Image 1: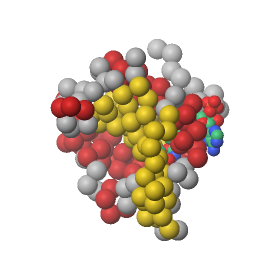
Image 2: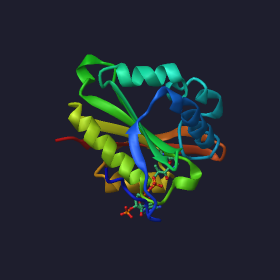
Image 3: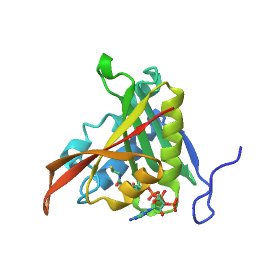
Image 4: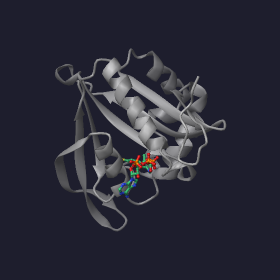
Length: 178
Ligand SMILES: CC(C)(COP(=O)(O)OP(=O)(O)OC[C@H]1O[C@@H](n2cnc3c(N)ncnc32)[C@H](O)[C@@H]1OP(=O)(O)O)[C@@H](O)C(=O)NCCC(=O)NCCS
């Protein structure tokens, strides 16, 4: 199997998450939550996130494609994750919402782009017609990645997110799938 390589030439693997990944996934969320401007979850909410619980990760794999959860692994370490959750309404069942995050030491090497491309292929194969996501307006790196993977900004909630330094806009971005 040919593995993708990051910008430093080190190979990594993208695979479906397994229950044993839950502690690492919880650690990624815990790492991102306190940092101003990256994700919507606050540190207090991380414990309630399904991806941080082995039982829920098992359900992710078993729920018929309504929740897809993948990790990037490098040298046996879970470097990052991407997930796609179907909107839980019949009339919107063709839409899923994407979330992505990498541990600090693994960013800016192309792993995020590979995870995005993997998630887009998986969503399309699963029959979704559209992926949407939300991103805090100051998160320029994430927005650059989403634009590169052909997401377009379709909305903006003004002053939606309260962060330590004040209020921030929240962008809605979408990508239609073939
Ligand atoms: C956002 C995140 C997923 C991006 O993944 P990454 O692996 O760091 O990004 P990549 O190295 O794959 O870079 C993707 C592309 O964006 C470009 N890019 C990165 N930062 C940029 C910036 N500030 N401005 C313009 N382009 C930028 C890169 O050059 C690259 O383009 P290329 O492939 O043409 O060279 C990752 O940095 C992360 O987890 N950040 C913290 C959590 C977070 O913000 N999650 C998203 C919440 S909505």
